[in-house]
Length: 464
Image (tube, rainbow, N blue to C red; front, side):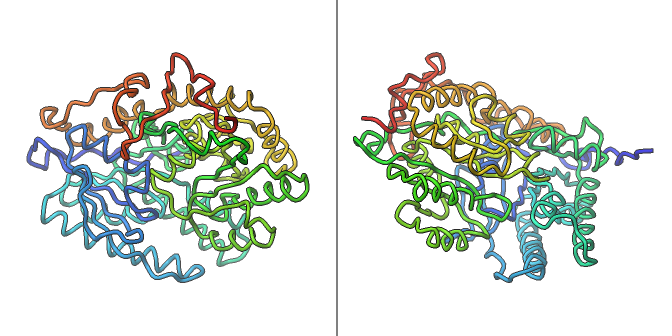
């Protein structure tokens, strides 16, 4: 008989009431605000009247402490790079200790009512367990299924060492589910895992999808896009790990340029990860250095520049135990910039993209390249899919639709923030952003209107 984890109870009766509850968000795998989901969560809590602190690793050139838009960000130097399982263990232990140390300092400055931990890894349940005696609640914001990540990278474990590692990941996940007062899942597939494998009560698991803020993620006028005869641009945006399939982008470019003889196409790869240097070497081996650009880490300004001038977004994630049930942020961010895209046929990618994405069977490189070439040669198809993609992401997938459910998790644990302390935030549609300089660099957006569903002249990326 299936046993459910005991329902965690909020402990706000042990804390003195405050008009502005304090939430501590812990992230290990990305700095903030580079982690766009976490940054949107921080802004949502701040706008709802919460005080927000973040602990995360430093990015290049980052200070140890910063305050951005009233969010207090505490950063530590990342763990030394060591290859193999020992490297992962060192990173987990080092990051946990640095995070724990910083959490005590934050508590001394101002006690917090809730810790939100974003995985990977699934180790911060132990930190939340330590803070329980102070009446602190624990929210688990599950970004990845780590056992499925292991299976996607290494397959079913056959050696004793592999079985031990996989068992360890399952145990850490189990302890995280068991310790959490509430679980936030990024989609229904993850939620079903939390209920079935994590044995959580359904009412304690809330779906908060990752979605772009389409008020800010929207095309900007591109001078490059209006240059007559310019090459068409393919773009990839995201992490470059073994499970992300970015090498397929290079294989597609090799097929287009060296086998099909196309001279009118270029590719830009934005992001970083374990495979970054390996991918750069592979691009050289395939003689693609002249037509493929690697940007490294991409901030919001770089993303806006490249996605505004690109013609096609690429989603090369192969079907795997992890990818099939994961929501790909890049798919929705392409949609926000009115980009048509090509993807392998994955369950949750279809949930995001609907009929606005071209899908092919996982691993069929020829079919993938055929669909890319089809979009390259059909201007009207690109415009039609781009218009439909922008319309879908605005109406169904925008982050604003997720904010009430997300903030509601914390209201339920703390009793809610004092609404008098929260700034007044009005939701606006695309038409409200036509006037003034809404972009953070004083650039005017392309005039997108959901009622017009994007006029063709807004998508003249390739033809003057």
